[in-house]
Length: 455
Image 1: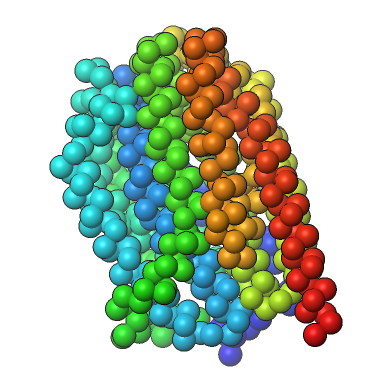
Image 2: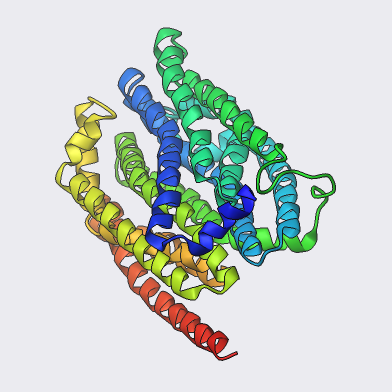
């Protein structure tokens, strides 16, 4: 009865209250997740040095690849589960849950083995040089086993939220973040393990988070739990998971490509300190995007369930509320970072040259950042109603269709400043295109709603 009540609330509770109830724990959980990386970068930058933080920046593309593969399953399965639960098919939802675990284990086993074999060539591809390779490898090699734990903790955290447990999903991430924050200074500074200590702190923290989330899905008194017979591969379920998870996964794959292009372009037009500045810029903006992604995670089960149940007016209200909140967040954070770039940099380093490079980067990159929140929310809308192809297009607009060409064109015209200018120009172009796609989709929803009303 309690489990049915949890799902019923998605279709009956006032939309504003529901979005707050689901988004707040998701935002906290996502911020906590981001703290793994932020805390690592702060301690490494302050106690190891600017070369180490530049080496850490080189690892971002590899981390994005691992995250993309995890997101492919976690977000795709949670989106599909929400729609299926809205349709009232709990048995099918549990088959999706079991297949999600199988797919997570298969994917992680393949990419972790590939990373272990090709680590040095990958790091060179993504911008490592003789100065930064030692630090980048020292962080990534111990971290490899923990990437599976990260995929489990993050992916099934999404499913936990989609099945009516937003508070418990938040605690999953909170527990690990507290452990990581305590262990980081202990391993890096007290034990003098340096950048390798940061990796081991993350591994231990993610192991605890993964154990907590797995314990939830082995309990029989929750909305969905693991059952025998649900782990065998179902081609239709795999296809549904991958199609709905493709949009956010491609964003992370695109982030990998962007980081590689940016790092190598900065090596050509600048120094390793400019790569460090890019790492600080990405860390700062990722915190803002993380808050928006938390809203997206709270929004996804609301839209998915109400779409499956045919409650289109609730779907649209939830989308507009979320889009407004996301825009306010990226606008506030972007403006503060644009006005106080040096203060942002001082959280990560005291090196004057790196601070100068960070001030230059943030002062240009954040010029159009306020519009980013709307675009991210719009991709979640399309993904949550099963419009996989449109969600993919919207997800790729900013980081691929606009940004990658600009990174090849503008630096040839304006040098180092051209690298930074590519970001705001891309943000503006992608937002204009997103408005056109979403406007058309909302008209389609209105048409479908009128058709149902006459049946």
